[in-house]
Length: 605
Image (tube, rainbow, N blue to C red):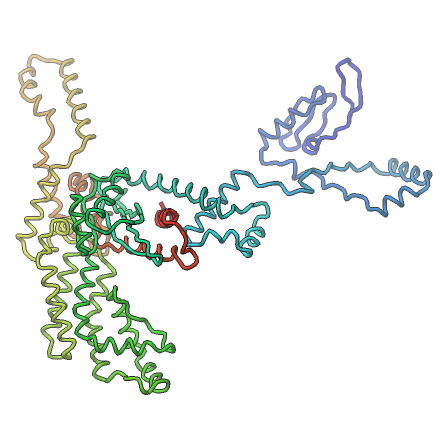
């Protein structure tokens, strides 16, 4: 094309820039966009306007998409044949090409055609974080980044991604992920009005002792559970040392004055430690059931031992008994009853000398499973508001078996008697337990129906009235003072001699806050008169719809329905910890175990 220079002369210029594939030249110094037909100036031969237009108006169009592919480089044979050809022939070919067709423009090859572009640093960090999350969630060892198969797999997914070293992963990436996860959990815990803690202790395969602390609270009318810490306990497990660690964790998370209950098993040192902290202690309902059922199973120990000997055969592959969990005994008996014929046949063929179970012992196992089945069902659904009802239900079922003792064998009869005796000892004052009774009363599914005696229910709701009256609402108080000030200001501007005396008499009554005791009594009375909701419904959903109607009760509800009835959450942490401190990772430091367990438990936040 022809372009006018600064001195007024016209000169030929070649449009070499790739930008011209998207623009049409308009003499003498303009261009038209082929996409939106906009006209832009190219005075002086500059294409800056064109690039600026493409970037601002058509950001999704990339020049690389329209750039022509580079022509393949000439081979050695082509070069030699070209160089040995007569000059006249080369000239003729050149002339013929120039006259017959326009010469094709060859795009200049870029560096990316020969060398892979390195991954963006932001993308590298994002992929490193995903790798760290995978290791924490799937309990993988840090050495996975050195495994040949994993490196090949990663390279196939993205050849430009550079796997971090084992040391970088352990000392940099995992601690950073732990820090960010800790900040997210801290933000949620800071917003909680009341929390319930659970704690337990455990010793790993490397004889390292750990102590776990979990936190449970209500946020946006949803139950939230987080792991606060899984720390190494190098000192003796005395009550003072355990209490010191519990308080240290609570101070670190700023929840010392938010704890409404701390749940643990019945170990004497743990119970004493919680009492030393000043927090209310709640026994683990699941652990109590475990003690009750174990006392009953002792009556059928000979039959259980014979079943264990039978399960020692490698061909059976049936469930074994675990001494720390009574459920395993129930599952063992249930499974062998389901495979009764196969067990008898296998024993007769493989080991006829082994003492087999008699028909009476098979019947004894069936009766024992019928007695233990309700206890297994209860362990599946345990919450603080259900403990009283569940305990009473189990006592009622055990009493019915006791009344029908004539149809039971002697060992099963002893099993039932032991269970009834233990439940009477453990649950005889359960309705007077402050935390459990208030949690049951505030559950819209139960209310007064959770109690056998009306007197016990009346005492609980009387305590609820006093507790609700002590609930404070700073926002509402500020609004009341502001409304009082506005009323006083309005009365001063519109004073009337007729209403002056009356306004002076009622001013204090108008601006004074309502009686909190009267409000709490009205709320409790209205709450009791509300119909019960179905047992399968979520009580927090009901409270969310009534938070405006019963504001004081709703605030106190968050301090009771956040309580869990078992320390299983802390024990479940050790199940993960045991998988982390495996044979392949036995040299993992306690600080790294702490970080990995924390990330694994709280990454969903």
